[in-house]
Length: 156
Image (cartoon, rainbow, N blue to C red):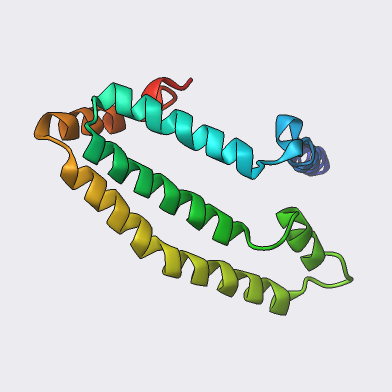
């Protein structure tokens, strides 16, 4: 194949991939409404009930699962930050003629700090919950994790 044809095909393929990626990122579907506090609370409750039913948790275990869920919600909220539109923060990095490296580094530092602040609390809550499980329940969790994929706790 001639080199100019080859380069043209590679360029066309690259452009198609880039445009397809931008189109996929631009269409937000059902997520356009975002996650309200009520929706998060509703999903938290459903997840706790589903996991409690699958693992047959007692009241103490269910309480520890609730603490874990609270920590996860708090971490998510802190990571999201005060911005109502996290995409706007990223868009601001490329809004000018040049990529705003200083703002990107500040954003990275902010997100990293949130992970460092909330990560230990979340892992402690996860450890407390997991340690409260019976060996049979722990084995059930390991088996679910082993399957990974799409059928995590019946979602799919």
